[in-house]
Length: 286
Image (cartoon, rainbow, N blue to C red; front, side, top):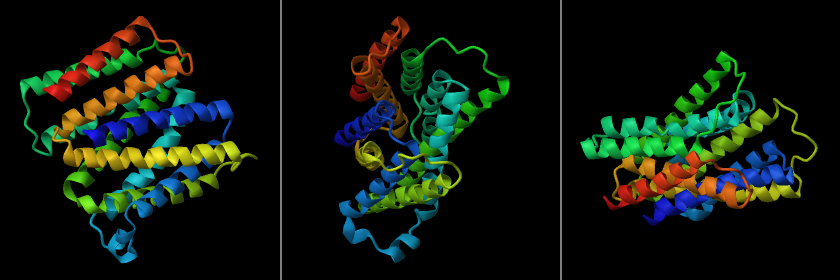
């Protein structure tokens, strides 16, 4: 379970890093580029003996690492665009509820046992997440803009499913660091290419951008590295593991927002948080 908690903490600190980016006015493109560069280096430092170009090129997991790496960058920019156009609430719901996709695939493609108890737990988990992040929908959203959260729902769910597929079928335990490093290297190269399509601004690599990029890279690598290890070693079915992971990230992020950034939470949100904590205890204990 230690790997799962470490992954959750890293994901929560990713949220904190982005909130600090707004406060310190760090350049978004610069933060992303530095983040992926640092994350790719961490895989090499974690297990330098496995970093052999021929080994990577011939690895069974390379095509799926390339795909996930590209999707990481695409989904990140889509989240930013959807937040601006469709609203942060709709976007957040779409990305969080995307856990339905890997849960579905875990149940029906990876031969996990489906029981009434497990279905009830998953249903309560989804209800808890909805309540925890619920806000009144924003007005005057064009119908075509609703496609953005739908794309995010499918895209975010696909990324999680691909990570599960890679872990289940292709990645030996001793190759997790280099898989993560290769994936983030692809994201780094893709973010560099995207940089040429937009004006980066004058503070692309200023002090705040540099520091936040490094911290985000540490947490980003840790989130993926520890989560793959959790899938391998936690002993919990992956369908339930995705639920626990998502619930914990939602709760910690909301509580961070409330206590650190003084963000408001409604009564419904608090009900969702307490229900989430209850669900986490049940999912882990039973």
